[in-house]
Image 1 (spheres, rainbow, N blue to C red):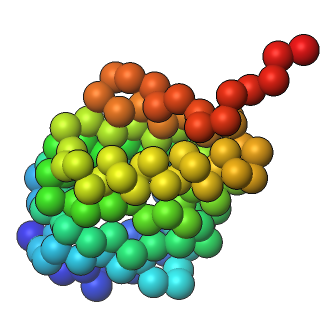
Image 2: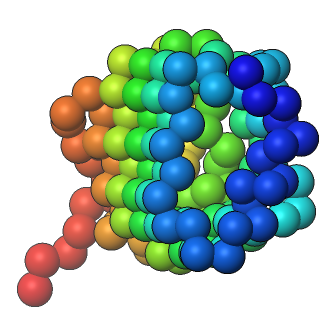
Length: 137
């Protein structure tokens, strides 16, 4: 039941590499990450979280490698800019709403358009294929 303003304390931790937010640990349905980066965060998991909107950009997560979103049925979308994180390797989504899946399709398309076929998006255990097939040598 923390306030979202308390997140700035967590964001400022210089050595934080893993963050798991679950069971509605923050009050309110909007998470705005603001301008402050999670300096060393590599793994972020949102589980059974009641947020509907998540406003964030790639500058907030400069080292993120893996994003997991589990049982967040109210979350409308994953911020499209998160696909631009150069270190991001995986997005795993389990048991989420249809609108969130639409945002994942947009992320997949944007990444394919810039030639980033390495980003793996897994939805309920199945890999979302690239929109553009890879050329095999």
